[in-house]
Length: 433
Image (cartoon, rainbow, N blue to C red):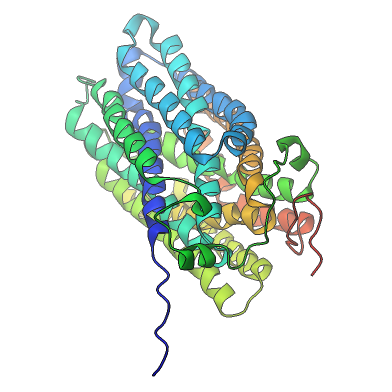
């Protein structure tokens, strides 16, 4: 009689579904203002510099939040840390709806600042959750699944906003209030479902063993986040996040570009954004599958991740031609190609952290790294807003050139800083094989 194969179980995917939901809410909340940007600019008489200032306030807060939120999540745990993050961003997201026209600029700056503080906790908490609940060989795929929700949120925003808000701006407050209901639902489900795998009473022994099958044993002693700062691996990851500025350019300035270049307004932005962000979703899933498949074929983690990143960087190059094309749909397609490549790049760069660092330092390193990306994005927003006011659409030409060529240059520096991706132990020393 042959032995029956041991059933591992799939409870980890319930946890992943909640991370997917949280990130969808996060990006829906974040994307609303980008979709309504042309309408809000007319409604409140903002200049491009004013709009850039509102975007910068979000990014400054996001960067400040990343500086301490990752360490806080590592300290208090994922369950409490994630809840705190979504509660803060939901309160400030709904606060947008009560801003009066006379104080619109300062009001939106304050509301976006609070939103940025709260939203800074999402990715450190999400990556830490994946590191806790998935083995290394499955982390890129799991990260790809939840990272695809960024596009789901970005896709939902134009359709929901377009269905509710008029071109003149009537009912602009309602989409900001909608996320509060979604967030309250998520917090209820999170507290009913989540716990660390080793403490979860619904997790089978077989699934727990599978989750820990390719990870080094860790002590319960905390690693102070400041201890991760001197590591070259921290800054290698930080370099990969510089491209977040490109993603945010698509998200916050994409609707404005399509409006100014091709007269795409709030009532017909939905379909172009659907195309762009479905392509981005494909990048999230394919990128995760690609590096995971290469690892399962026997490639080293180092080779699998970096070859995947190189392919992504090459795929992204044609986005540099967007400003010179005459067709709206060709421009949308090329932006979609850039978004596809970026999402694949992003999920593989996220997995570099738990590939190298202990799980208990993951949120700290993610926070530090993404703070660097935010700082670069702030400079880009200020520069783009200024150029657009002074020189018109010339600013978009240079923005897309940078969007196309930055990835391949960054990958070279990442390899110099982290050539072998040797894992680190609890003392952040290289593990000797």
